[in-house]
Length: 427
Image (cartoon, rainbow, N blue to C red; front, side, top):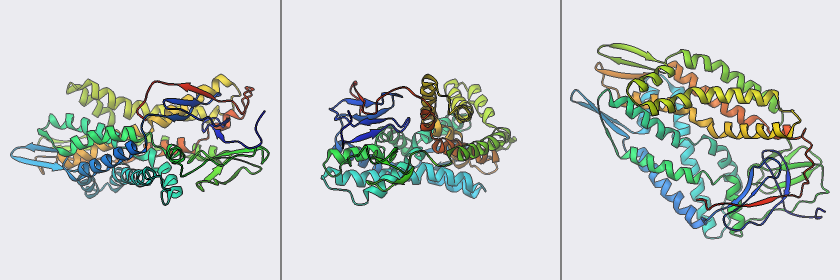
Protein backbone atom coordinates (compact mmCIF):
# COMPACT_ATOMS: atom_id res chain seq x y z
CA UNK A 1 0.00 0.00 0.00
CA UNK A 2 1.17 3.54 -0.73
CA UNK A 3 1.74 5.78 2.27
CA UNK A 4 -0.55 8.82 2.74
CA UNK A 5 2.41 11.19 2.47
CA UNK A 6 5.82 10.11 1.19
CA UNK A 7 8.82 11.30 -0.80
CA UNK A 8 8.39 10.42 -4.46
CA UNK A 9 10.75 10.31 -7.42
CA UNK A 10 9.67 10.20 -11.08
CA UNK A 11 11.72 8.86 -13.98
CA UNK A 12 12.43 11.69 -16.43
CA UNK A 13 12.43 9.26 -19.38
CA UNK A 14 9.23 7.29 -18.81
CA UNK A 15 7.38 9.14 -16.03
CA UNK A 16 7.22 6.10 -13.73
CA UNK A 17 6.61 7.16 -10.12
CA UNK A 18 8.74 5.59 -7.35
CA UNK A 19 9.16 5.86 -3.62
CA UNK A 20 12.49 7.66 -3.22
CA UNK A 21 15.12 5.33 -1.68
CA UNK A 22 17.88 6.23 0.77
CA UNK A 23 21.19 5.31 -0.88
CA UNK A 24 24.53 4.42 0.63
CA UNK A 25 27.88 5.15 -1.00
CA UNK A 26 28.42 3.42 -4.35
CA UNK A 27 24.71 2.62 -4.75
CA UNK A 28 22.30 3.69 -7.41
CA UNK A 29 18.55 3.43 -7.94
CA UNK A 30 17.25 2.57 -11.40
CA UNK A 31 13.76 2.88 -12.86
CA UNK A 32 11.93 -0.45 -12.75
CA UNK A 33 10.27 0.22 -16.07
CA UNK A 34 12.83 1.72 -18.49
CA UNK A 35 16.09 1.16 -16.54
CA UNK A 36 17.13 4.84 -16.38
CA UNK A 37 19.41 5.66 -13.44
CA UNK A 38 17.34 7.81 -11.08
CA UNK A 39 19.80 8.40 -8.25
CA UNK A 40 23.45 7.63 -7.74
CA UNK A 41 25.66 8.26 -4.75
CA UNK A 42 29.37 8.27 -5.51
CA UNK A 43 32.56 8.69 -3.51
CA UNK A 44 33.17 12.41 -4.02
CA UNK A 45 31.85 14.80 -1.39
CA UNK A 46 31.07 18.49 -1.80
CA UNK A 47 34.64 19.53 -0.91
CA UNK A 48 36.08 17.35 -3.68
CA UNK A 49 33.57 18.69 -6.21
CA UNK A 50 34.44 22.25 -5.18
CA UNK A 51 38.16 21.59 -5.65
CA UNK A 52 37.53 20.19 -9.14
CA UNK A 53 35.31 23.15 -10.03
CA UNK A 54 37.86 25.77 -8.90
CA UNK A 55 40.66 23.94 -10.70
CA UNK A 56 38.58 23.77 -13.89
CA UNK A 57 37.78 27.49 -13.69
CA UNK A 58 41.48 28.42 -13.43
CA UNK A 59 42.45 26.04 -16.22
CA UNK A 60 39.64 27.48 -18.35
CA UNK A 61 41.07 30.98 -17.98
CA UNK A 62 44.59 29.77 -18.85
CA UNK A 63 43.29 27.85 -21.88
CA UNK A 64 41.57 30.92 -23.29
CA UNK A 65 44.32 33.46 -22.50
CA UNK A 66 47.22 31.43 -23.89
CA UNK A 67 47.79 30.50 -27.57
CA UNK A 68 46.69 27.05 -28.65
CA UNK A 69 49.49 26.57 -31.19
CA UNK A 70 52.06 28.43 -33.32
CA UNK A 71 52.30 27.82 -37.06
CA UNK A 72 55.51 28.79 -38.89
CA UNK A 73 56.10 28.98 -42.64
CA UNK A 74 58.61 30.85 -44.86
CA UNK A 75 60.04 32.80 -41.93
CA UNK A 76 56.61 33.89 -40.68
CA UNK A 77 54.73 32.57 -37.67
CA UNK A 78 51.15 32.79 -36.45
CA UNK A 79 49.73 31.91 -33.05
CA UNK A 80 46.15 32.22 -31.87
CA UNK A 81 44.00 31.78 -28.81
CA UNK A 82 40.46 30.44 -29.08
CA UNK A 83 39.01 33.95 -28.73
CA UNK A 84 41.36 35.25 -31.45
CA UNK A 85 40.16 32.47 -33.74
CA UNK A 86 36.58 33.64 -33.17
CA UNK A 87 37.59 37.27 -33.89
CA UNK A 88 39.28 36.23 -37.16
CA UNK A 89 36.21 34.26 -38.25
CA UNK A 90 33.96 37.25 -37.52
CA UNK A 91 36.29 39.55 -39.47
CA UNK A 92 36.22 37.22 -42.48
CA UNK A 93 32.47 37.77 -42.77
CA UNK A 94 31.06 34.77 -40.89
CA UNK A 95 29.45 36.21 -37.73
CA UNK A 96 27.03 33.28 -37.40
CA UNK A 97 29.86 30.72 -37.19
CA UNK A 98 31.82 32.97 -34.81
CA UNK A 99 28.80 33.53 -32.56
CA UNK A 100 27.97 29.83 -32.31
CA UNK A 101 31.56 28.94 -31.41
CA UNK A 102 31.77 31.79 -28.91
CA UNK A 103 28.63 30.64 -27.12
CA UNK A 104 29.30 26.89 -26.94
CA UNK A 105 33.09 27.14 -26.52
CA UNK A 106 33.46 30.10 -24.16
CA UNK A 107 30.35 31.83 -22.77
CA UNK A 108 28.32 28.76 -21.78
CA UNK A 109 31.28 26.77 -20.31
CA UNK A 110 32.29 29.87 -18.31
CA UNK A 111 28.72 30.23 -17.03
CA UNK A 112 28.61 26.54 -16.15
CA UNK A 113 31.87 26.61 -14.18
CA UNK A 114 31.05 29.90 -12.45
CA UNK A 115 27.65 28.64 -11.34
CA UNK A 116 29.07 25.35 -10.07
CA UNK A 117 31.83 27.10 -8.12
CA UNK A 118 29.36 29.54 -6.54
CA UNK A 119 26.88 26.83 -5.54
CA UNK A 120 29.49 24.38 -4.25
CA UNK A 121 31.27 27.10 -2.25
CA UNK A 122 28.18 27.67 -0.13
CA UNK A 123 27.22 23.99 0.03
CA UNK A 124 30.70 23.21 1.32
CA UNK A 125 30.00 25.60 4.20
CA UNK A 126 26.58 23.96 4.74
CA UNK A 127 24.80 27.15 3.71
CA UNK A 128 21.98 27.62 1.24
CA UNK A 129 23.54 29.10 -1.94
CA UNK A 130 22.03 32.50 -2.79
CA UNK A 131 20.11 32.23 -6.04
CA UNK A 132 20.14 28.41 -6.05
CA UNK A 133 16.72 28.18 -7.70
CA UNK A 134 17.60 30.48 -10.60
CA UNK A 135 21.14 29.14 -10.97
CA UNK A 136 20.01 25.51 -11.06
CA UNK A 137 17.49 26.34 -13.78
CA UNK A 138 20.20 28.14 -15.77
CA UNK A 139 22.61 25.24 -15.22
CA UNK A 140 20.06 22.80 -16.67
CA UNK A 141 19.87 24.97 -19.80
CA UNK A 142 23.65 25.42 -20.14
CA UNK A 143 24.88 21.85 -19.64
CA UNK A 144 23.99 20.35 -23.07
CA UNK A 145 25.59 23.32 -24.86
CA UNK A 146 28.98 23.29 -23.14
CA UNK A 147 31.29 21.83 -25.81
CA UNK A 148 34.87 22.07 -24.57
CA UNK A 149 35.56 18.32 -25.18
CA UNK A 150 34.33 18.74 -28.76
CA UNK A 151 36.62 21.74 -29.22
CA UNK A 152 39.59 19.75 -27.90
CA UNK A 153 38.98 17.04 -30.48
CA UNK A 154 38.71 19.77 -33.10
CA UNK A 155 42.13 21.10 -32.04
CA UNK A 156 43.65 17.64 -32.60
CA UNK A 157 42.13 17.41 -36.08
CA UNK A 158 43.33 20.93 -36.95
CA UNK A 159 46.85 20.13 -35.72
CA UNK A 160 47.08 17.09 -38.00
CA UNK A 161 45.89 19.11 -41.01
CA UNK A 162 48.23 22.03 -40.31
CA UNK A 163 51.25 19.84 -39.63
CA UNK A 164 51.27 18.93 -43.33
CA UNK A 165 51.22 22.60 -44.38
CA UNK A 166 53.91 24.13 -42.16
CA UNK A 167 55.86 23.73 -38.93
CA UNK A 168 53.45 23.61 -35.97
CA UNK A 169 54.34 23.87 -32.28
CA UNK A 170 51.75 23.16 -29.54
CA UNK A 171 51.43 25.95 -26.98
CA UNK A 172 50.24 26.24 -23.37
CA UNK A 173 46.61 26.73 -24.41
CA UNK A 174 46.51 23.31 -26.05
CA UNK A 175 47.65 21.49 -22.91
CA UNK A 176 45.30 23.57 -20.78
CA UNK A 177 42.37 22.58 -22.99
CA UNK A 178 43.43 18.92 -22.67
CA UNK A 179 43.35 19.16 -18.87
CA UNK A 180 40.09 21.11 -18.99
CA UNK A 181 38.50 18.36 -21.08
CA UNK A 182 39.17 15.77 -18.39
CA UNK A 183 37.97 18.07 -15.59
CA UNK A 184 34.75 18.93 -17.41
CA UNK A 185 34.12 15.26 -18.16
CA UNK A 186 33.93 14.68 -14.41
CA UNK A 187 32.07 17.90 -13.65
CA UNK A 188 29.40 17.15 -16.28
CA UNK A 189 28.07 14.57 -13.83
CA UNK A 190 26.95 17.54 -11.74
CA UNK A 191 23.67 18.29 -13.47
CA UNK A 192 20.99 20.35 -11.74
CA UNK A 193 19.36 17.26 -10.18
CA UNK A 194 22.70 16.18 -8.69
CA UNK A 195 23.20 19.71 -7.29
CA UNK A 196 19.91 19.51 -5.41
CA UNK A 197 20.85 16.03 -4.19
CA UNK A 198 24.09 17.46 -2.76
CA UNK A 199 22.11 20.29 -1.18
CA UNK A 200 19.94 17.70 0.57
CA UNK A 201 22.99 15.76 1.75
CA UNK A 202 24.40 18.99 3.20
CA UNK A 203 21.14 19.63 5.03
CA UNK A 204 20.27 22.93 3.31
CA UNK A 205 17.38 21.66 1.15
CA UNK A 206 14.71 18.98 1.47
CA UNK A 207 12.33 17.05 -0.76
CA UNK A 208 8.75 18.14 -0.32
CA UNK A 209 6.43 15.22 0.55
CA UNK A 210 3.81 14.22 -2.00
CA UNK A 211 0.18 13.58 -1.19
CA UNK A 212 -1.02 10.82 -3.58
CA UNK A 213 -4.58 12.12 -3.23
CA UNK A 214 -3.70 15.58 -4.56
CA UNK A 215 -4.40 14.79 -8.22
CA UNK A 216 -4.04 12.43 -11.16
CA UNK A 217 -1.17 14.06 -13.05
CA UNK A 218 2.47 13.53 -12.07
CA UNK A 219 4.40 16.80 -12.45
CA UNK A 220 8.11 15.93 -12.23
CA UNK A 221 10.60 18.80 -12.25
CA UNK A 222 13.47 18.20 -14.66
CA UNK A 223 15.64 20.72 -12.78
CA UNK A 224 15.48 19.50 -9.17
CA UNK A 225 13.51 16.20 -9.40
CA UNK A 226 10.75 17.45 -7.08
CA UNK A 227 7.48 15.62 -7.74
CA UNK A 228 3.96 16.94 -7.30
CA UNK A 229 0.57 15.41 -8.03
CA UNK A 230 -1.99 17.77 -9.45
CA UNK A 231 -5.33 17.96 -11.23
CA UNK A 232 -3.67 20.29 -13.76
CA UNK A 233 -1.21 19.28 -16.51
CA UNK A 234 1.21 22.13 -15.82
CA UNK A 235 2.41 24.40 -13.03
CA UNK A 236 5.50 25.69 -11.24
CA UNK A 237 7.84 23.54 -9.17
CA UNK A 238 7.29 24.28 -5.48
CA UNK A 239 10.99 23.88 -4.74
CA UNK A 240 12.95 25.55 -7.59
CA UNK A 241 10.08 27.42 -9.32
CA UNK A 242 10.80 25.93 -12.74
CA UNK A 243 7.90 25.39 -15.15
CA UNK A 244 6.68 21.80 -14.88
CA UNK A 245 4.48 19.90 -17.33
CA UNK A 246 2.89 16.47 -17.25
CA UNK A 247 3.91 16.29 -20.90
CA UNK A 248 5.69 18.98 -22.91
CA UNK A 249 3.03 21.12 -24.60
CA UNK A 250 2.87 20.90 -28.41
CA UNK A 251 6.09 18.89 -28.43
CA UNK A 252 5.27 17.09 -31.68
CA UNK A 253 4.81 20.24 -33.77
CA UNK A 254 8.00 21.81 -32.36
CA UNK A 255 10.01 18.64 -32.84
CA UNK A 256 8.87 18.25 -36.45
CA UNK A 257 9.53 21.90 -37.28
CA UNK A 258 13.06 21.76 -35.86
CA UNK A 259 13.78 18.46 -37.63
CA UNK A 260 12.56 19.92 -40.91
CA UNK A 261 14.89 22.89 -40.46
CA UNK A 262 17.81 20.54 -39.74
CA UNK A 263 17.08 18.50 -42.88
CA UNK A 264 16.85 21.66 -45.03
CA UNK A 265 20.23 22.95 -43.81
CA UNK A 266 21.86 19.51 -44.02
CA UNK A 267 21.83 19.65 -47.84
CA UNK A 268 23.91 22.86 -48.23
CA UNK A 269 26.06 21.80 -45.26
CA UNK A 270 27.32 18.89 -47.34
CA UNK A 271 27.21 20.41 -50.83
CA UNK A 272 28.93 23.73 -50.05
CA UNK A 273 32.55 23.94 -48.89
CA UNK A 274 33.03 24.34 -45.15
CA UNK A 275 36.34 26.11 -45.83
CA UNK A 276 38.52 27.52 -48.61
CA UNK A 277 42.31 27.15 -48.68
CA UNK A 278 44.12 29.78 -50.72
CA UNK A 279 47.84 29.27 -51.49
CA UNK A 280 50.26 30.60 -54.12
CA UNK A 281 49.36 27.48 -56.14
CA UNK A 282 45.66 28.41 -56.22
CA UNK A 283 42.47 28.25 -54.18
CA UNK A 284 40.44 25.15 -53.34
CA UNK A 285 37.20 24.51 -51.50
CA UNK A 286 36.79 21.61 -49.07
CA UNK A 287 33.50 19.96 -48.16
CA UNK A 288 33.01 17.83 -45.04
CA UNK A 289 33.60 14.61 -46.95
CA UNK A 290 36.61 16.18 -48.65
CA UNK A 291 38.12 16.92 -45.25
CA UNK A 292 37.68 13.28 -44.24
CA UNK A 293 39.42 12.11 -47.41
CA UNK A 294 42.26 14.58 -46.83
CA UNK A 295 42.90 13.21 -43.34
CA UNK A 296 42.88 9.68 -44.75
CA UNK A 297 45.41 10.63 -47.45
CA UNK A 298 47.64 12.23 -44.79
CA UNK A 299 47.79 8.84 -43.03
CA UNK A 300 45.63 9.86 -40.05
CA UNK A 301 42.99 7.19 -40.64
CA UNK A 302 41.96 7.25 -36.97
CA UNK A 303 41.14 10.97 -37.02
CA UNK A 304 39.53 10.55 -40.45
CA UNK A 305 37.25 7.91 -38.94
CA UNK A 306 36.41 10.17 -35.97
CA UNK A 307 35.57 13.11 -38.23
CA UNK A 308 33.52 10.85 -40.52
CA UNK A 309 31.49 9.55 -37.57
CA UNK A 310 31.08 12.97 -35.90
CA UNK A 311 30.31 14.99 -39.03
CA UNK A 312 28.47 12.53 -41.28
CA UNK A 313 27.24 9.49 -39.35
CA UNK A 314 26.11 11.35 -36.21
CA UNK A 315 23.97 14.06 -37.92
CA UNK A 316 22.26 11.50 -40.18
CA UNK A 317 21.73 9.14 -37.23
CA UNK A 318 20.19 11.92 -35.12
CA UNK A 319 17.77 12.91 -37.86
CA UNK A 320 16.77 9.30 -38.65
CA UNK A 321 16.34 8.34 -34.98
CA UNK A 322 14.26 11.44 -34.20
CA UNK A 323 12.03 10.69 -37.21
CA UNK A 324 11.58 7.10 -36.01
CA UNK A 325 10.71 8.32 -32.51
CA UNK A 326 8.35 10.96 -33.89
CA UNK A 327 6.31 8.59 -36.06
CA UNK A 328 6.35 5.65 -33.61
CA UNK A 329 5.87 7.38 -30.26
CA UNK A 330 2.63 5.47 -29.54
CA UNK A 331 3.73 1.92 -30.31
CA UNK A 332 2.05 0.47 -27.21
CA UNK A 333 4.72 -2.22 -26.92
CA UNK A 334 6.87 -2.36 -23.78
CA UNK A 335 9.91 -3.82 -25.60
CA UNK A 336 9.72 -1.29 -28.44
CA UNK A 337 9.25 1.65 -26.10
CA UNK A 338 12.25 0.59 -24.04
CA UNK A 339 14.32 0.50 -27.25
CA UNK A 340 12.99 3.97 -28.14
CA UNK A 341 14.12 5.26 -24.75
CA UNK A 342 17.63 3.92 -25.35
CA UNK A 343 17.71 5.53 -28.80
CA UNK A 344 16.59 8.85 -27.32
CA UNK A 345 19.35 8.68 -24.70
CA UNK A 346 21.88 8.03 -27.48
CA UNK A 347 20.66 11.10 -29.42
CA UNK A 348 21.01 13.27 -26.30
CA UNK A 349 24.53 11.94 -25.67
CA UNK A 350 25.94 12.36 -29.20
CA UNK A 351 24.14 15.62 -30.00
CA UNK A 352 27.01 18.07 -29.52
CA UNK A 353 29.79 16.09 -31.21
CA UNK A 354 28.75 17.16 -34.69
CA UNK A 355 30.13 20.64 -33.88
CA UNK A 356 33.63 19.21 -34.46
CA UNK A 357 34.06 20.45 -38.05
CA UNK A 358 32.99 23.99 -37.19
CA UNK A 359 35.70 24.25 -34.50
CA UNK A 360 38.29 22.86 -36.93
CA UNK A 361 37.44 25.54 -39.49
CA UNK A 362 37.83 28.53 -37.15
CA UNK A 363 41.17 27.22 -35.86
CA UNK A 364 42.52 26.74 -39.36
CA UNK A 365 41.33 30.23 -40.33
CA UNK A 366 43.17 31.80 -37.38
CA UNK A 367 46.45 29.88 -37.61
CA UNK A 368 46.95 29.39 -41.36
CA UNK A 369 46.78 33.08 -42.20
CA UNK A 370 49.97 34.12 -44.04
CA UNK A 371 48.57 36.60 -46.54
CA UNK A 372 49.31 35.74 -50.18
CA UNK A 373 51.38 32.71 -49.15
CA UNK A 374 48.51 30.82 -47.52
CA UNK A 375 45.16 31.60 -45.95
CA UNK A 376 42.08 29.70 -44.82
CA UNK A 377 38.53 31.05 -44.79
CA UNK A 378 35.26 29.47 -43.63
CA UNK A 379 32.67 28.59 -46.24
CA UNK A 380 28.90 28.79 -46.19
CA UNK A 381 28.84 25.05 -45.56
CA UNK A 382 30.21 25.72 -42.05
CA UNK A 383 27.31 28.08 -41.24
CA UNK A 384 24.76 25.57 -42.53
CA UNK A 385 26.39 22.70 -40.66
CA UNK A 386 26.43 24.64 -37.39
CA UNK A 387 22.70 25.25 -37.79
CA UNK A 388 22.15 21.52 -38.40
CA UNK A 389 23.81 20.81 -35.04
CA UNK A 390 21.70 23.43 -33.27
CA UNK A 391 18.38 22.35 -34.79
CA UNK A 392 18.92 18.62 -34.18
CA UNK A 393 19.83 19.29 -30.53
CA UNK A 394 16.79 21.53 -30.08
CA UNK A 395 14.53 18.90 -31.66
CA UNK A 396 15.78 16.28 -29.18
CA UNK A 397 15.24 18.67 -26.25
CA UNK A 398 11.73 19.46 -27.50
CA UNK A 399 10.68 15.83 -27.85
CA UNK A 400 8.89 14.12 -24.94
CA UNK A 401 9.86 10.46 -24.76
CA UNK A 402 7.47 9.98 -21.82
CA UNK A 403 4.42 10.24 -24.08
CA UNK A 404 5.09 6.82 -25.62
CA UNK A 405 5.08 5.21 -22.19
CA UNK A 406 1.55 6.50 -21.61
CA UNK A 407 0.36 3.82 -24.05
CA UNK A 408 2.28 0.97 -22.41
CA UNK A 409 0.41 -1.14 -19.86
CA UNK A 410 3.10 -3.13 -18.06
CA UNK A 411 1.43 -3.54 -14.67
CA UNK A 412 4.30 -2.00 -12.69
CA UNK A 413 3.27 -0.61 -9.33
CA UNK A 414 4.10 3.02 -8.71
CA UNK A 415 5.81 2.48 -5.38
CA UNK A 416 8.44 0.05 -6.69
CA UNK A 417 12.11 0.91 -6.98
CA UNK A 418 15.28 -1.09 -7.42
CA UNK A 419 18.53 -0.05 -5.66
CA UNK A 420 21.47 -1.65 -7.46
CA UNK A 421 25.02 -2.13 -6.17
CA UNK A 422 27.62 -0.79 -8.59
CA UNK A 423 31.37 -0.66 -8.89
CA UNK A 424 33.01 2.52 -7.56
CA UNK A 425 32.67 5.50 -9.91
CA UNK A 426 34.23 8.95 -9.89
CA UNK A 427 31.11 10.75 -8.76
